[in-house]
Image (cartoon, rainbow, N blue to C red; front, side, top):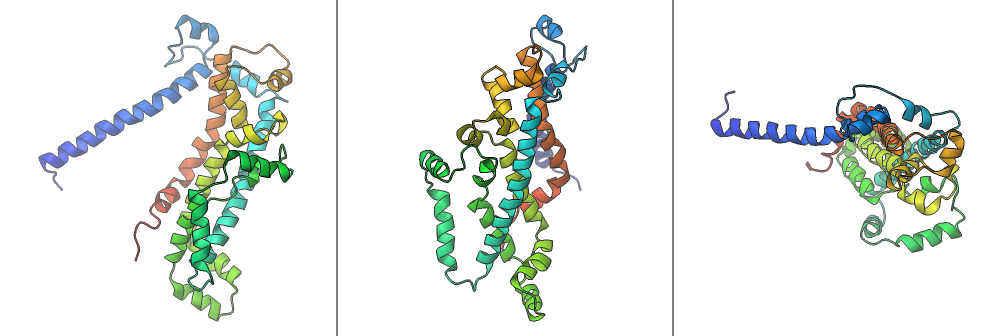
Length: 291
């Protein structure tokens, strides 16, 4: 199909704008990677302008990933919090969305108003902190799992998808004697992989990137997530004492450690996202078209 002059100009403009945006996004990350593998004396000689490394050194990664390093325990904490948190959050979100998608549920409107109310009005940081302290969750191993285990917005997104599943499928299963749990597990969930992948990815990113809750509720570095360690290294331009003690040697220059830490923390998300991108794109359209 031949494009008109206006359409061709529009397409060309889109390509130019998207190319510029891509370059603006890629160059900072490329710079971070370049500095993290460049010896410090070369970094100093070139006044920090490193886009194409001429010499390679992995001393920063070796220092951070040395056996017994704080980064290991922090990574383990983050992986545990993320895995358990995503599973728990999806369980709570799926069950709530499935129940509220049923029009025959008594008090359905009241329950929806309660969930929406939590999106508009929250208790606030101090009351939440006091509540968590009174529950004895401060500095516990699972406080970072429970504190973010539910999102009303994600529940509404999933509820909208469930409402689009034909009622005839659920009625047929019910006639055959299936319970509500079996209908959810064997009928609804297999048809809902796009929205589950989308909501799961949203929870995954939230749990993986969380450092603010760790700042509030965790004081033991051995229970801290890797994002809090990264935040300390980058924001304060200093290394946590526990990291220095675990390494047991003179640390290399902080700028290189900062860049290497950013790469180490960001790498898992860069690896995982391409595998679920197609589900994420499908799920983002959930609820945009109603039949």
